[in-house]
Length: 346
Ligand SMILES: *[C@@H]1O[C@H](CO)[C@@H](O)[C@H](O)[C@H]1NC(C)=O
Ligand SMILES: *[C@@H]1O[C@H](CO)[C@@H](O)[C@H](O)[C@H]1NC(C)=O
Ligand SMILES: *[C@@H]1O[C@H](CO)[C@@H](O)[C@H](O)[C@H]1NC(C)=O
Ligand SMILES: *[C@@H]1O[C@H](CO)[C@@H](O)[C@H](O)[C@H]1NC(C)=O
Picture 1 (tube, rainbow, N blue to C red):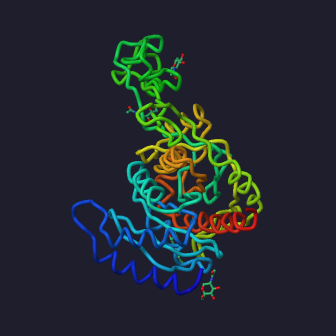
Picture 2: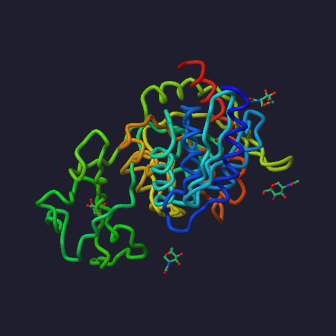
Picture 3: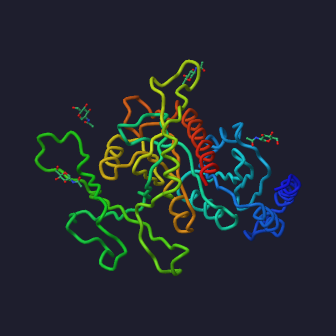
């Protein structure tokens, strides 16, 4: 595509930026800018949770910005990463923001695949802070059926018989996390148990209003194969000149990751997540982006750098405060390398 077209896009962006309506409909100027952008597509969508994770990519020498389109409270940033046309978009924290933003990206723009990245807590004792985990499957673990007190795992859940809810995943029994009851013959907890529920999904290939259920959502198999080629990449181990990890962080493909609208900083829940789900990264967006891409039939992968131990560390406080920027930088290094592979391999 010629420079002139990129310039045209940039000019329209300014127009679109000034034409934001308050009523929710897409303004005509924005619509035009979107059409013009799509004429230059397709793009790889890069979906990023927060500013501190987007920053290192914006300032990377591998990234060149060409223009922006603002609408629906989101900024869609056009540019290239290593010559590949990309749209960067920041979602904001957690599952609702991640889903909305990904859906807007896929509904309005010519996107051939989505690369999602960010930082995460780490539930897997074999991995360390700074490592970059790339799971093959993601699940949203924030959709629960909370069983009433007095009912056991054998008791049917409310609305279970017609297929609305299941007892396939779980339970998490609160009484099992009671402490200081040694020698106490009988104890229980009114919070009883929760059962994890699969999402209702409505794939574009299905019939509208006809639900399907999915818990584990696979990433794109070609993307995952490319990710495996990144395992030799050397990553940064120092926060600054004085604070360093004692090892060199690595890129590791893992089986599973989980996401929910929950910041996990709790050793018991961390170990439950690892034991029950075999999950390594624990975050607040990836499964949400995965569920949208899956339903929209768009290739997807999530690259998550571990910034803390999700409550499992021996430190007195969560490690993310110290290692967040190191992790964000490592995630970006892996994303850039992944995009290079994508361009050379496809
Ligand atoms: C960014 O743009 C400049 C100027 O067009 C070009 O020289 C440079 O190679 C580009 N860098 C990348 C990583 O695409
Ligand atoms: C809770 O603890 C009991 C007693 O150790 C055990 O039999 C049961 O499997 C545990 N249940 C769950 C859901 O962890
Ligand atoms: C529980 O027991 C531990 C170890 O005996 C003790 O350190 C802690 O203070 C107790 N916690 C409570 C809430 O009583
Ligand atoms: C390096 O980072 C650590 C952790 O954030 C901080 O305590 C320390 O002051 C920093 N050192 C320098 C030289 O900036």
